[in-house]
Image 1 (cartoon, rainbow, N blue to C red):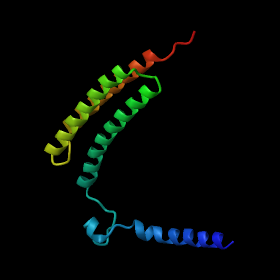
Image 2 (cartoon, rainbow, N blue to C red; image 1 turned 90 degrees about the vertical axis):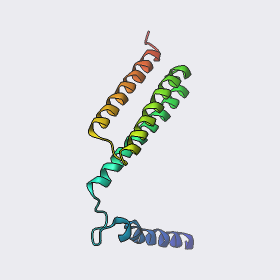
Image 3 (spheres, helix red, strand yellow; image 1 turned 180 degrees about the horizontal axis):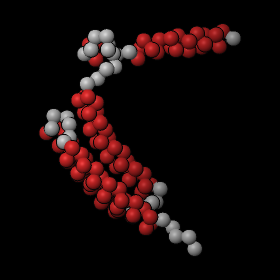
Image 4 (cartoon, rainbow, N blue to C red; image 1 turned 180 degrees about the vertical axis):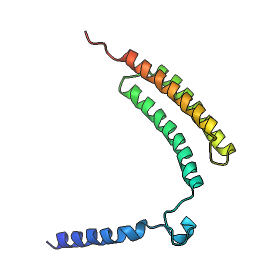
Length: 132
């Protein structure tokens, strides 16, 4: 009973402390009286960096497809090399652009990523067991 009471008290204190802990300090936001308010440029940089994370996740999914028998190791290695090259190119463009892509770069990266995805899907479809 004491354990339940102590656990309940701990959970309750966390619930009350969570909003205070979640607040950003004024110095981190750079806006007194406007915590959580961010300039559009900051949001844009986060969005551009997100593209790199998506490419990293794609690499992870390719490895998982091999484990599940949906791709051969050779196919995955080919796609992984292309995905890494795309990620490296994106990273270089992001660094050269001060943390942001131009609209043209974004479009080009989207098209290259989509082309790679289509190749991967076509390869996985070809290796799926066909119903008899």
